[in-house]
Structure formats: C-alpha cells, structure tokens
Image 1 (tube, one colour):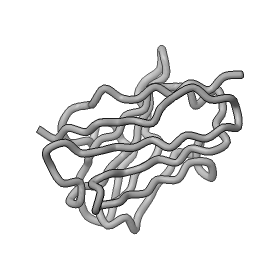
Image 2: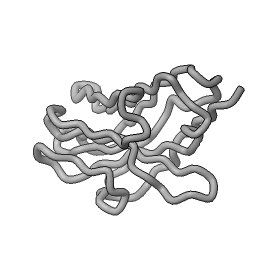
Image 3: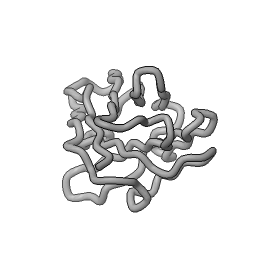
Image 4: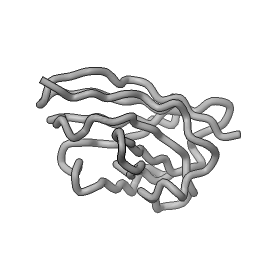
Length: 126
C-alpha cells in the first residue's frame, strides 16, 4: 500500500506563506511522480502541482502558477509545496499522492497510485 503523510498546513493571513511536506510511509518516493491536490468544501478535488520522478518536469494549475513551487528531496523521501502569496481561495484540505514514474507528471486526481491520505488543512483568512 502506497501511503503518504501530509503536514505543514495551518492558518495564515492573505499574502502569507506555508510549506507543505509529503512524506512516504513504507516505500521510496524516488520511483514515482508526486502530485499535490486540494479539495475545498463543496468542491471537487483538483490538481495543484506535480513533479516528475526525476524532478526535471513540474506542472502547476493556472490558479497557483507563479505563487507555488513544488520540489523534492529524494534523500529525505519527501516532496514539498512552497506556497507564497496565499489567497482566501487557496483554503482547502491539501493532499499529496504518488503517480506514474518517468519524465512526466499529472494533475489528474484519478491518476494517482494507492489511496488518499488524511491531508493537511490550509486556511487563508484575515
């Protein structure tokens, strides 16, 4: 079972920053692309950002491009999502999940491997 643990969420004011972490449990993330997804109340889960197995390919949703940065540290078996200039519309539960390896990655929530973790809550409000 490919399980991940998300952490780093919290409550911040608009314009603030947070760094989310995605740690693998019981397997090595090196062989997988990893995506970050989010789900706001009453909305469908959507892809936010992803990074390929090699780290050479990244992708971002239009709504976060230029504000969020995804990175990976394979030595620590962890993927990060640095979120800057946060907006109230970024409020959601954030999830990460592994996906197919290679030099591509996908923002499609239907393309993940394994099951969803518990996520980490991000709340942006004044």
